[in-house]
Amino acid sequence: MKIIYNGLNNLTGWLRWKELETALAEEVGFDDIGSRNDAASLRIVYQDGLAVLGLERGSDSPVGFVAAWASVTGEFEIGSAWVRADFRKHGWGSHLTSTLLQLPRLHSATVFAISQTPDFWSVARKVGLRQHTDWHSPASWDATCSPCSKVADDAKHTCPYRDRTCRLFIR
Image (tube, rainbow, N blue to C red):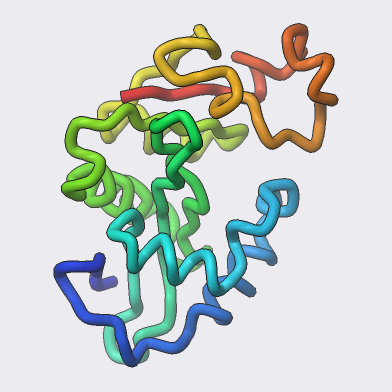
């Protein structure tokens, strides 16, 4: 896999954003994230210098992606983290996420990730994120506990998934 990000490589001619959108849509757990995993949003977050893309050597097929989505309150949420099945269990998720955290716009920012996936919990720890049980600070409640397809907005203060199947990591 070759790792690329805006500023390192010019992807002007890479037109496979729809292929990446399809790959993410086929993954379990990406169905409740909303519209940010469409081809246009993925291309924009990459062009804004807030995403890292892994391409297969030779074919330039997408095999990995991770983005930092800006929240309205100024933090960045790590999301759209994906590695193609045949590239998993080889450290690529950690490598992509570590590269993402080194991008200039994220250097001194509050960065967080919310995940229900034990594989990503492991990645988060490897790249220096720490599990955080205060879902209100330093990242705001609106940023850390939304959107969610499992719990209604008015019931989030008593969410039964928080810190159990749904975990918050912060740097």
